[in-house]
Image 1 (tube, rainbow, N blue to C red):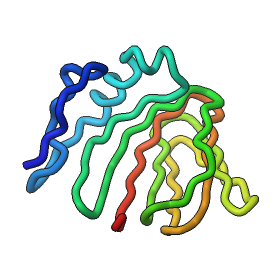
Image 2: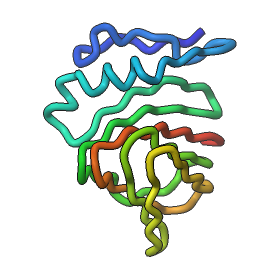
Image 3: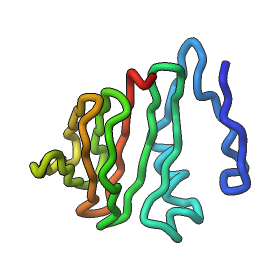
Length: 129
């Protein structure tokens, strides 16, 4: 069983990140990250809800116009928009991903993200070596 330790910014943050199975309460985690001080001061906040040697799942809240600068996909990834809208730019092409949609990106591709409104994204990255 792997735990995440509490931090100064998230004193009640100790939680199981990996075990035989991990049940994740998405609604409770969204509520937590949008009620934290970080959300009020920054254009984003996130929480890792699962992590093992081959897969990481991160729940992200992005303020309107928050941008993730261009980066290379470290593994095969999936961005699922739970609420809101994002634009993903890859090789000059813009994909708009709406509430309830997801975008899969293969490892090694470069991408950037911009939130067009307050957006909640579930990011899953697999196959990171």
